[in-house]
Image (tube, rainbow, N blue to C red):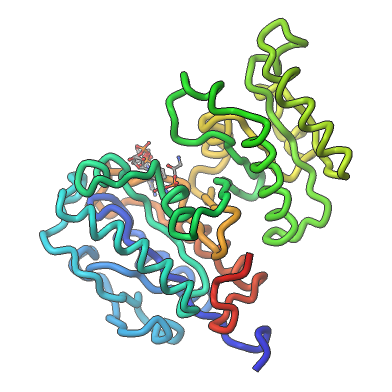
Length: 336
Ligand SMILES: NC(=O)C1=CN([C@@H]2O[C@H](COP(=O)(O)OP(=O)(O)OC[C@H]3O[C@@H](n4cnc5c(N)ncnc54)[C@H](O)[C@@H]3O)[C@@H](O)[C@H]2O)C=CC1
Ligand SMILES: NCC(=O)COP(=O)(O)O
């Protein structure tokens, strides 16, 4: 059987932080995607809201024809407390992510989609040494050069620096780091998003992109020379651009992805435009990983009011990307 004719494996969905909303939005996502995007939850059935229809599976393949939410059991021990992390759960949250990655490597899953984790709960409960999934997944992939992208219908954004204090951003920026982020984004736009000549906008760091050196020199000394070098290779790059004027509708029409210098420069515009439909994608991994754009939402956990739209969008995008890569058991999750 050729790869294109082979049936794509289902997506592995992780539970995330049990005190959050991950387990609550899994079943509504299954109902919305049934027959369209096959996936299974790796987690503890006891974390599902009372009355949830689910089927326990022993092999990911069983998810392909499931009529209720398929759950690959992973026991977490102590009961879930909505809104309050249980320290003993932390290592299981981490193990579930690693288990999902192993299933993509064996070809039993075509992609992973991660429910939100609570970074501090994992650090306190299990000494988790990573700022988030992105860096943990890079480590599990053997040290891949990864990039965080947030994507919705109207916008794709990429922060160069991610989960570090704002005061550390200028020192963390370098031409080497920025070049890696631009190259990884450029390659992913072609491979995963089917854009043959990606138009990439690059934000400045300072107000008004430094205004010719009057408000900072990072643009003149660091960003502009690199963009000139990459343009000479044929990349379609604009910038360094003023961050305050690059996200309105007319400006967004002029590029396919925006590279931003720090977390909030990138995530504020996309979460404002489409909090319910935004998707977090890790670029540069040898397997597909997406996630909803929101966090654990402890304030509403256990109330049955969490909106599953972002998770649904994340599962849809993972499926589209896995199809584009032909992630069957034959492809084994090892392609670059
Ligand atoms: N991919 C991941 O693992 C992510 C994890 N986080 C983590 O989540 C935790 C909480 O972060 P916050 O900044 O408070 O953001 P948050 O997204 O958890 O919550 C912000 C606000 O949005 C609401 N909200 C979030 N998702 C919702 C949904 N699906 N339906 C309805 N309302 C929703 C919450 O109730 C809250 O009022 C932190 O530990 C953070 O690190 C945050 C973003 C992504
Ligand atoms: N602010 C985005 C976020 O926290 C997601 O991080 P990650 O867990 O996907 O690395």
